[in-house]
Structure formats: C-alpha cells, structure tokens
Image 1 (tube, helix red, strand yellow):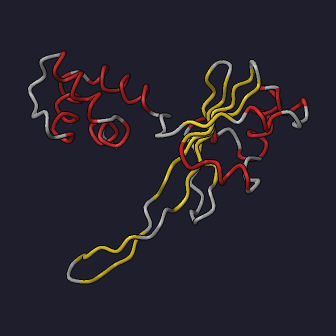
Image 2: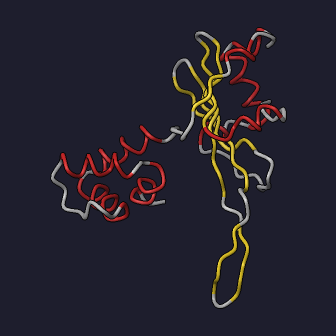
Length: 173
C-alpha cells in the first residue's frame, strides 16, 4: 500500500491540513487525497511518522480497568502474554501479521510490541453495503480494523472504537 493511501485512511484531514499549511506544501487544502499525495512525495519520513502516530487511534477510547480484577496473574505479565500469542499464531503475528478468512466475528490479525504495552489488531467484515458496479447491484462488506491496547504497568485494557463486542464475546484469547 502506498504511503498516500495510508495517510488518507489513517490520518484525520485536519491533521493533514495543519502539516501541509505549516510546511507550505503545495496542495489543495480541501482535498484529503491531494494533501496526502503531496505530503508523501514532499516528505515521506514525516508522512510515515504521522501515519504511525494515528495508526491506533479510534474515534472512541474505552478504558476497561474495572473488568481486570479477576484475571489470572500470568495474563498480567507481558512476557507470558507475548509467549502465548507466539505459540498460538507463530512469530508472524508480530512480524507482518496474518490473514485469516474474515467474517463478522473479529479475528486477531496483528500484534505490536510497544515497550510496556501490546497492541492487538482485530479485523472483521462490517455491515454489507450495496453498490452499483458495471450496471449491476453488488453487495460488499468493508473490512474493519479495530485495536485493543493492553497496558502492563499497571495492567489495564484500552479498547478503541467497536472492540467492546469482541471482549464480551470472549475472542480476546
């Protein structure tokens, strides 16, 4: 995937607009696509940094500290949690992710080891939408990606956006 595509998908247009204005990058400020392309070509390092900054952002963050009291102590230790992920999904879960067959049920696709926390990326198919394509009505479900951030010092779970259903359905290991 191109950096400009990642910027369009991950970074809010307001943040792109601010960077483009502050850096005097030549782009139409009313076009997210154009601002992303201009930033990606003008300063790819800054574009990558900006994409990384917004990678795990969700529209809503929910902290589930209350639900953490009954968890066995081995799960509150990052090393044990990481080892279990590697046992179940191989090292690929941390290196490039995996590509399971998606359906409506969230599936773990990637894990990120970030110092004192782990970020788990889950993917599932969203609500089907109808489109007119080549004079035919087709129905497609968009791929959704949501994140769970597990903090280990102190132990807490932070959920980004729609992940509440995942935790209640027992998918989180």
